[in-house]
Structures are given as structure tokens and as C-alpha cells.
Length: 154
Image (cartoon, rainbow, N blue to C red; front, top):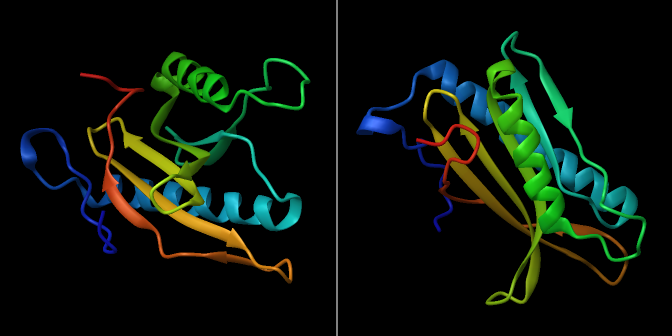
């Protein structure tokens, strides 16, 4: 992972159009901000998705945990989000799924955002975070990486 944001890869190796890049940038920024605010307000956040609808509006998509147990199955929620996004893909031009992950090598937690566009571009970001003894939250610079496509596969 590098510290600089790459141009998302697109099918055929061509750079994505400016509109595609703009959609992904909006989703990425909104998702990271949303997760940071939830951490600061609640101390945690559940997996969620954001979409850029065909009309250009950004909307949130959420699923309920499978049950009301204390231990939420985040992986199941992420799978459910991708299922819903796949079913609704004709209504959206871009999607982002945001989740809380643990980075064992760095021994820290992080916000993970995977974005993809109907036109083929996909990029992800990992942003490590921690809570200080005084209760303040710190967020590292996002690290950018390639992402797989799950909503608009193949």
C-alpha cells in the first residue's frame, strides 16, 4: 500500500473518465467521514454501503444484523450488503462498502472502504485509527489499494 491515491484501474487499462473518478472520490470521502463520525460519537460502527444513484444522488444502504446478540456478525452483514447492491445495481452507477477491520501486522483497527463503478473502476482505502487515553480519536492517512469488483463482476 502506498500513501498516494492512485487512479482507479479500469478494464482495458484506460484511465477512467473524470465523472467516474468524481463518483468514486465522493463515495470514498463520504464513507471515511461517516465512519470517523460514528467512531467519535458511538465508539464503533456497523458495516454499511453508500451508492451514487443513476440520478447522481448519494444514498446510504444498510442491513440489520442477523440477530440482536451482542456479537454482531460483520462478515454476514457485508455479504448481505453486497447481495442487496447486486440486486439493485441497475439503479446505481457506483457503490462503496465501509467496514471496520483489524490489521494484525500493525496491531490496530482500521476503516476499510471498497468502491466500484459500473464503468469498471475499483479502488479501496484502509485508514488506521486509534483512541487515545484522553478519549480523542486519531486517524492515519488513508492507504490506497486496488479493489476487486463484486457488484459489477466480469
